[in-house]
Length: 198
Image (tube, rainbow, N blue to C red; front, top):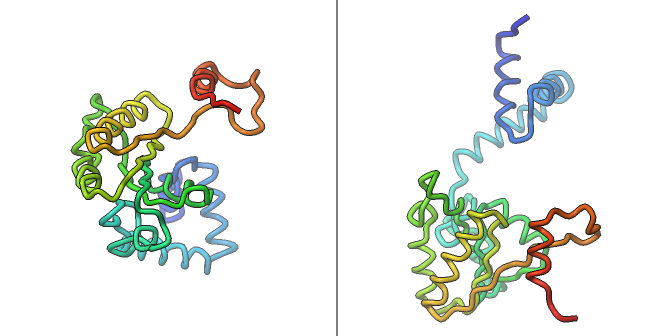
């Protein structure tokens, strides 16, 4: 039997979230309506407020409700090191690891000519402007280990070299606690190519 009405609309709306299928969306909808209406109201209000007020930082292009995000505004971060990532979610992951104390630049994607995504769509002009200011001494390329991510990293490394800026790439390979028999060939190749002396 096909369901209709507001309950069905809510379930269908929740399916827009990544990793949420119809069954998960149904559980969420029933939970919000039966057990946590206050939480549902808070969720709806916060979501509307965030959609209305969150935009992009003018310097690094991550998501923020301010013109300049707290990472770019912080005087305790190293302006000479710039980490280039694909998405605002990558900024969160790298920052939460507490191993990087420099600044960021978010591409909002990666080079993909087949999808019509070139340098103009990724803000390379803004990145080039930032590099010409002379503050950045090293650019860390933290794009994903895909064909497009590697091509994007290579393109940006060439931009950096033209400005006499050191371009480095984050290491890819065997994860901590990983066992070699479960590692795919491509990951293992990256690990061998990126080996270092002990």
